Length: 107
Image (cartoon, rainbow, N blue to C red):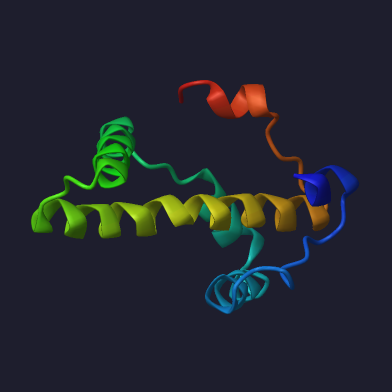
């Protein structure tokens, strides 16, 4: 968020390699594709399921099937990092990005 507010491209040097490479690839995307990525969303139902599975995982009571679901949903949740980076890149490229209040409004 600090990079977005400052209007500079965000730095990914401090991220783990697996995330760094994925985020650096976003820099090659067109503005249109970045916008599409930034505006993508996880459904409310999937977000609730992820939260439930995280709690069960903390309690150590996940079944094998639930562990697989958590892994899949975790990958979806990591898209949020990609979304934030996409918004930061768009702002750096001179585009207006929505305010936090605008992001919370239903479409």
